[in-house]
Length: 215
Image (cartoon, rainbow, N blue to C red; front, side, top):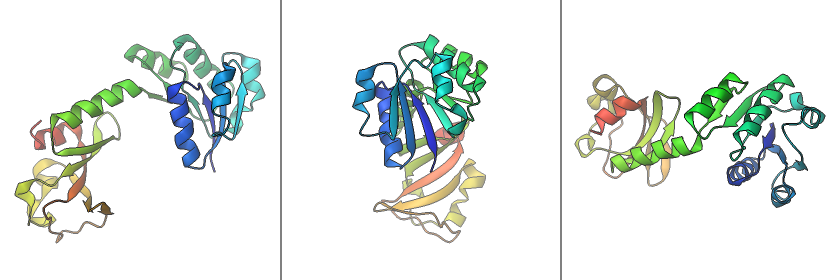
């Protein structure tokens, strides 16, 4: 079971705590505000009130004992930056920090963050893509270039096999799975015939998928 250090218990941090708890991950939660710490006591494994920009306080937590540290501070970029830098100096194995702007992202990466998450930007990207085509059901970014999409099966593909469609050659995408009535089948064979009403999980470059969907 992984041990996660979560710093910052605003709305974003609390959502992370809730999801990690559902995944049965051990969580040490930190915030400088007592009220926020009290609100997550029933969710996390343990929690402390403290200033994450204080080297002595962070050091007392045994930073190198955690598999990952998440800096979810969203309302004070200076504190987020200082915390990120201190975590790496104290031996953090992997630091994920939250950014609110492109500039924040650059500074965090330069000051120790192994990864940067930019919730507003990712949500905006997902919403824009989702609204740009009725064919897109879901969208999971892999990196800045590739993503996994869940799409409705195009009408021109109905009653045709994967081999006949040859989507990898024609569109530069790969079909990972087929969902029928909520059940996902990842064993996609060349002879598999697509039927109306199913959805497909496809992976490829975002631009190629957009081109294929005429976005």
